[in-house]
Length: 176
Image (tube, rainbow, N blue to C red; front, side, top):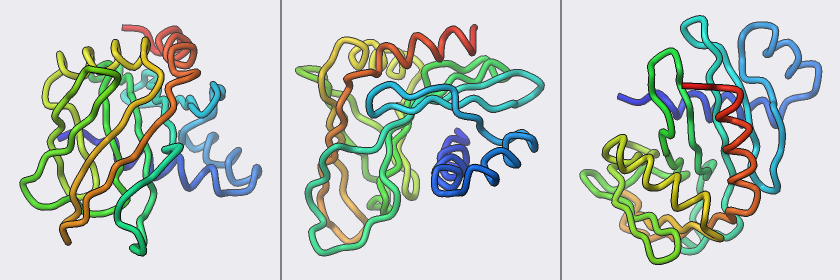
């Protein structure tokens, strides 16, 4: 199973931590900031002796589940050269998805179905990952629709401005 949720959790904790704590985490092999591209943040980490990278953003708009508390919501694309995995797309919904449900992602006229597990969703195949990333590189906004375990429907919207530049930098830092 993909292990992206732990990376995102560590990053979100680092963002909230003081600079001294961030420096200490970097010394211990934790994610290090590699740049910001509009709403997209790039981080590197070490895994299996190789540098990995992930690019993530939080939604610019959240709709649905009004009046309900949601945890961290984010979209992430990861390169894991040590595992020979690239362009892995994942979403943290901020709530547990309805069991055996799927989430829907769209970029312009292109639509994708993601599988869900607890609070995260992923593209179903590496080809789907690559197709999503290609759409993201040329798109303006991306939306993710999901359903919580309690039946609340949500729609999260992400700005893609800066994604292509961040993705290019990520691909330079974490080559195939």
